[in-house]
Amino acid sequence: MTATLALALTACGGGGGQDQLGGGSDAPEVKVEENVQFEPGTTMERLQQADKIRIGTKFDQPLFGLKVGDTPQGFDVEIAKIISAKMGIAPEKIEWVEAPSKTREEIIRSDRVDMVVATYTINDERKERVSFAGPYYQAGQDLMVKSDNNEITGPESLRETGAKVCSVTGSTPAEEIKKYVDPANLVLFDVYSKCGDALRTGQVQAVTTDNVILMGLVNDSDGEFKLVDNAFTEEPYGIGIKKGDVKFCEFINQSLQQASEDGSYAKAWEATAGKVANETPKLPQPQPCS
Image 1 (cartoon, rainbow, N blue to C red):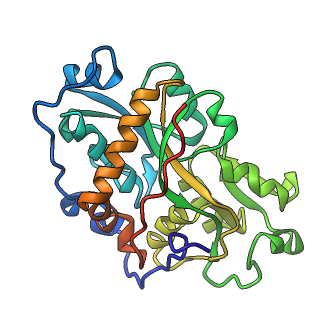
Image 2: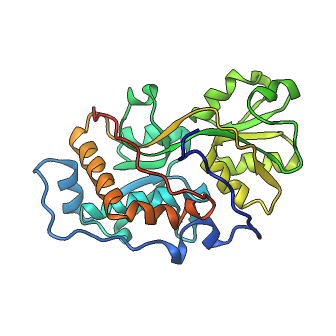
Image 3: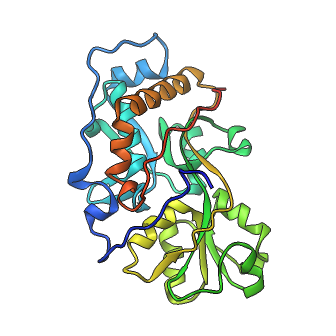
């Protein structure tokens, strides 16, 4: 397991207030670049001149993208703010668009967003439809169970116990878990919060997705859930953009590298997911833009 994946839950109390969820008054300020110039005809120039950007993110995932009041909060949100600020676009000029797993490619291809930052794993199938910048984080798929469940210890135990497992339609984890459970025991919803409800009521015995997403759900469960803490995949989170926009991809990668070097990447993590993780990750090496 890499250092990035070696995340541990801190002891947490109540029901996940605004500060626990990562955002609110603790969100770091971003430096909005002034008088930046871009090559004519690029996405960066268009967005800078418009002085606004549409960004898809999750609205239901504590620590990464959770809508609290009028705006979402979390690590994905802070990463999106950093990239926007590099184009001279202030956070209040961002239009946030909900991006559930099953709609992410669709909203990019139909021009409803300019980019998606939404716990979005880079994989070959998705790269046939959209392009990715990054990755900006390396996660790993894990399981969440009720706190008193000691029978489920990893994916191999799911079939042995006959457990029903919940995930989200259109997600990488939903496909991966099919290696370990019978189709009749896989329950799919459109958002992970519904999986949490299904676990709470006993409709399913486990929820699977990336460990950091599960950490947020555990943190918000009042001690009812726990992370199995046995990651069995590597999930590089990328930023989805229009297919073939190489210059925008290269700009985003450069912005991420600058954020890593100037400390704003670490501050974004520590104000959000870092509240329940014991290590600040390093920015992964970027994949080639295409």
